[in-house]
Structures are given as structure tokens and as C-alpha cells.
Image (cartoon, rainbow, N blue to C red; front, side):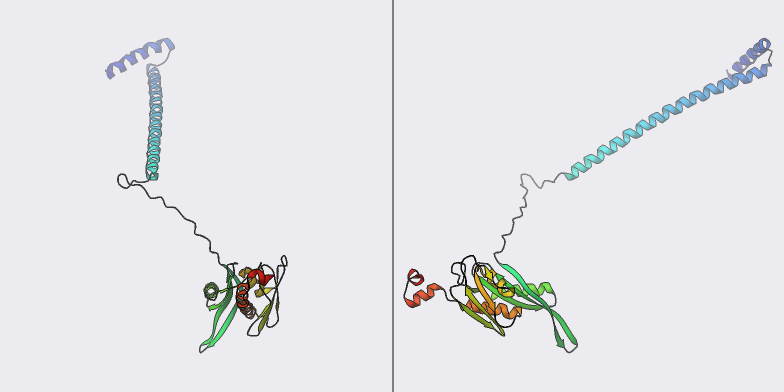
Length: 256
């Protein structure tokens, strides 16, 4: 068949060569060029169709993969059920009640101790603990770190709590306390006076719950001596109820 078609083209080329005054082999070359161009055009069309199909398949695969990943993520986020009919325990964080005790750090000092190998450094903390309801204490402790020293001082202060008799936001009577070289004088005050004191003495009176009082430091101004002297003065207070019992009077008769 190919041989016949070639012979037919040769005969046709001879006839056309007679009309256009060209050689038959030249016209045959023209036919071959036209055929090749047609075949090239068809190949280009087929390639474009194939590329379009490949792009569509890739897009479909990507969408399917994305959907599969999203479903996996959703499945992982869902909580797993344990057994049939078991209710999951809901953890509730209950707020811890705040402590009624108030701590105030008076002083933190660095101290040294001479030992065989040299000097040993440590920290000393003085802390006052009270609930502003008639209970107060002073604590002092040492440790190699500041935080540990404060914690030990708080524990020491809670061990040394005293009860303070308060009468109408002040103390029942004047009193003086001493500790070491320190001395503190306390005097009752009228309503609206406030706490007339400073330093460690003021902190002790505030945490004891006293609102109106006059105080004066007479001896050493060291915080530990002043705080202990104030504590000794508050210890020596006697409430009106005990005085009334000793005198055989009622509270109304004693106050009038």
C-alpha cells in the first residue's frame, strides 16, 4: 500500500510539473513536507491533551490527600472513650483558701562565722507574723540562702505567738517593755490617732491588730531588739476582765 501511494504521488507530481513547469521530484518533496507538518500538528495536539489530563489527575490526588490528612487530624482530636458507659472524670481545680496569717520581713543581713577553714557566710532574716486579730509573733533564723532563712524565720515566729488584749482598737493601759539593750514605751490613744511608731515597732503593732496607739523607742534602735521589746510590752498587758475579777467588780462598774 505504501508503494502504491508513493507511485500515485509520483504520477501526480509529474502531471503537476507539466502544469507548473516544475520537476516531479520537487513536487514530491512539497507533498512530503506538507504531510510532515500535518503529523507534527497532530502530535502537538496529542501532547497538549496528555498534559491537561496529567494536571487534572495530579490535582485530584492532592485534594484526596488533603482530605485524608484532615480526617486523620479530626480523628486524633476526638477523645478516646474508655469502656462502655463509663463517665469521664472532670478534674476541677479548687482554689486553696488564703491563709489569715500575714508575714512581714523586717531585716535580712549577711553574717559570717569564723571556722577552721575560714569564714562561713550565711543570711539572717527577721520576720514578724500576725493575723491582725490579737495574735502576733517575732521570728529570727539563719540559713545559707535568703529564701530558706525567711521560711525558717516564719516558722519560728508562728511558734512564738502571743495573745494581745485589745480594748476599743487600742491597749488597755500604758506599759513598757525591755529586751536586751532595747526598750519600748506604749501608751493608749483615742479613736482616730493611728499608730504613732516606726520601724519594727510599727510592724508588730499593725500585725497585732492595734489601730490607735502611741509608741516610743527608748533604748537600742536595732530591729530585733525593738521588735522583741515591743513583744515583751504586749505580753505584760492585762485585760480589763482580769482586773475586774481581781477587784470584784463588773466591767461596767470598772469602766465607769
